[in-house]
Amino acid sequence: QVQLVESGGGYVQPGGSLRLSCVASGNIFRFEDMTMGWYRQTPGNQRDKVAHLTSGGGADYASAVKGRFTISRDNTKNTVYLQMNNLKSEDTAVYYCNRAGTWLPWGWGQGTQVTVSS
Image (cartoon, rainbow, N blue to C red; front, side, top):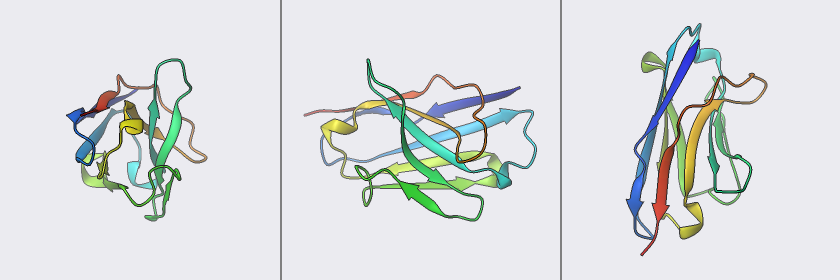
């Protein structure tokens, strides 16, 4: 069983920045081989992809965040990061991480709330 713990969310004004972290723990074999991703969800809506990062370092972003968000990882810590700059009110959501691409997702963590408001 694998546990995902997201952190780093909070309340920020438009134009501000946040850095999210996601630590995966438990029965994990070769985290470095996995494509990992960040997703976000607002009330009443489905969970949408924000960014994916392959084992080879290839990153893919949703068009709404391209140029503002950067996904990265530290395989030695089974951790994925999401640096979010120039935040907008429409970025307000609960953010989750999980495996991505062709990898079946693990059970979802509790997510971390990001609120962008003046």
